[in-house]
Image 1: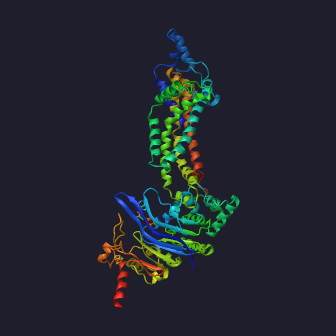
Image 2: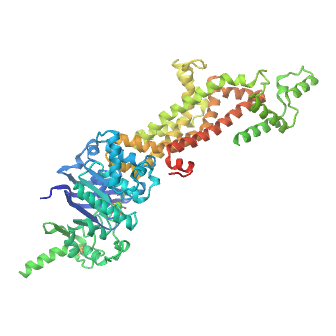
Image 3: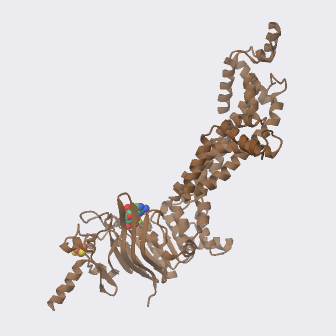
Length: 330
Length: 300
Ligand SMILES: Nc1ncnc2c1ncn2[C@@H]1O[C@H](COP(=O)(O)OP(=O)(O)OP(=O)(O)O)[C@@H](O)[C@H]1O
Ligand code: SF4
Ligand SMILES: [Mg+2]
């Protein structure tokens, strides 16, 4: 029933760094359907932003190597030319960045920067400016007209993020990638921004890839969730299902570590050990050094993605064991 | 303030120099009494501060820069014709420097580490490290003497200015180009560049409207700040190409100790430097809204 909009197939991204290749993203398979919110969660450095930027072909350039497919409405964006990519950006896929404070050009008025995007659709200036003001109201910007004529440094972080959202929604993209849209903001503003995003999803039926390391946020807005660890998606599925019965040991630990109340404790900090930096890929489960269930084969073999149900998959040998156990029992 | 400091300093230095202009323009045959009378007439026997105050007063009240001791005409008459020539030289050089350095620097930054990048940076560096008199002579040899494309010297036609402007520009080009490159590289790392690309703007638009526009702020500051340097280069260039401009006038007047002329020229240069600093402040304020607010008193 729901149409698939974005599909990542065997996406791997390595950064060439001193001493080898840093495996930032490894064999990621994900999809986002129209009108759906997919939350991508994981600790800092697990490759979330890398995935987001690769979809828009906006990786820093120079030192990364990308493999796999990025299919948008069935077409591989990696085969697109620069021109074709420019046509997609903003128009079909919008992106909100992690840090709203320096994501706006300091020398232009914020309204002008939003208008610049709208003008790409060949709308005349007067109409475009009216649209800017309308959008500012949509994102609940106080004093829309004044703010549109302000420079970025005259606005607070929350206002700047509103500008970013207005900018990226101005051309009604079908997919919005929001890379930690609220991390830099305080809790009350975060709640407001979330409301805006939810509203916009309702009004425009935009699909959203919401990147975050805040579980509270996920529970509130997302339909699906992808849990990442050290560059890999280790579990994916329906939000309720995963919150109810997580399968991967990492997800389980995360859920346990989840305090119910405040945002800051909601961050993932409570598992012993550190996320490894994977230099030069080698086989083995990336979570093995911290996993309480680690077995011998976890060290030498990479666990495959196993579908538990149609919409729920997990990357861990325990599942195979269980399956075998069941089979043996029968 | 700076203007006073410079003129006072120069005044004092000239005052302390052995001999006075009268000794130079009069030869031995002139009697000592006659000489003393002349010295008195021009006021060179007065103490330093009296001379200085009198000089300033005349300029401010009568726009009178004094008489050239050597040419026996008002200094202003000497400068009147020469200023436009020097301005033409410096102005064109500045314009061409910017027109070349900005796009070339942008390109060098975009194609960082490519052959073009290394070539443009090193080539201009080579140009800059050549002494300007040597480069001037080289240009004359190749394009005026050898190829006969341009006249060796003169100042009447536009053609006369091609080589001097080239020589002068070459000196400051590398600095501006490399600064542009460095600034662009820095701006390219800024998040708002990614934002601009993400909203779907064409690459070219992003480069010019967002990247170059921000890089321009620092480059402009630097160019204005380095104007005195350009002017000093112009002095030498005028000499080499025989353009009778302010630089030439200054050099010749120093040689013959024509104090009033030296004073007046240096005063002008000092004023110009101050104006440049002011201008650069104004231009930055226009280019950078963050500063505009600071200067404008923080209104919203
Ligand atoms: N340009 C780069 N060159 C080399 N390594 C990079 C580069 N960009 C990112 N990395 C590395 O790739 C890994 C993934 O980074 P990424 O920014 O995608 O993480 P993230 O999940 O977005 O983290 P955060 O939650 O802190 O934003 C990190 O180890 C990071 O150090
Ligand atoms: S594969 Fe092994 S080490 Fe990895 S999470 Fe599963 S049990 Fe733990
Ligand atoms: Mg990130």
